[in-house]
Image: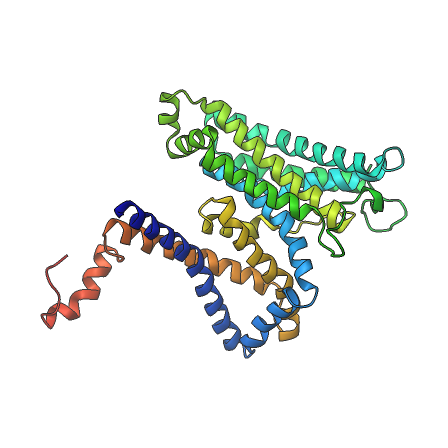
Length: 372
């Protein structure tokens, strides 16, 4: 009985820590909108209108597909306490494989074969591109934050060179790839605009959740993430785990890029980046690195991003305001985690000096008990 109660409390605490930062960020965003002389209800009503009502929910699900795949890719790395911050470059590499290779293969291969080659190719390129940071981390202890960022910058340059060079469409003045033939695009689900990339994203999230929670690999990963030194003592190959996690993370993020191009964009321009990884990051941590918990959080952001752009325009706000909301979620997530950990360990929410200052008026009135 006690175990069940404790488990329920942990579940409630996890839900509160995931939802509360979002609610506080939205309330703060509303206050900022009001301070700017705009109506926050018009903005939030517009988010719902343009992100859910009518057929707009389909656009939200289309956006959700690459976001969720990226989230799963990041979770693989983060659960092993590895910081794969090269997601921007990995996504673009996957997308350029789709936008550049698919038009070349369409005249000689059937559509399903083109899709298969592109998806497999993007996965291979994303995994290969992440190997250098992984090997440097595993063999020499090099900070993977720096190396993954450097590799991302290089990837962005390589992608732009490809689009302006061998992958460029000569019929278009601006540097971009040719539009992919319709037979080589991901098919739609029924009569909707939602492509099967959404199904791929959901399946990957559920498969990852099963892998983490129901398999021996998930146990080894948890041990490694908790303490790499302890993992070595129980026979877990630290080098192999680092390389594997980086490769899977990079492969999934690149897959997200190819799915996005094959299902939505159909071509790619130079100097283009949707910055999905930056937007997804807070929700990955709000989900506490759970792929299953990430699904509703990513769905929320997909609706907010899809409807928020038009809502911001109609309210008289800049579309960059959406980034402000994401930043607010990060701030309140940090505060919520700090307070939650203090509460869990029975400590004061305030630093000792600040707590003493705060209690001083009550001590003068004889209302505070003790000095602690």
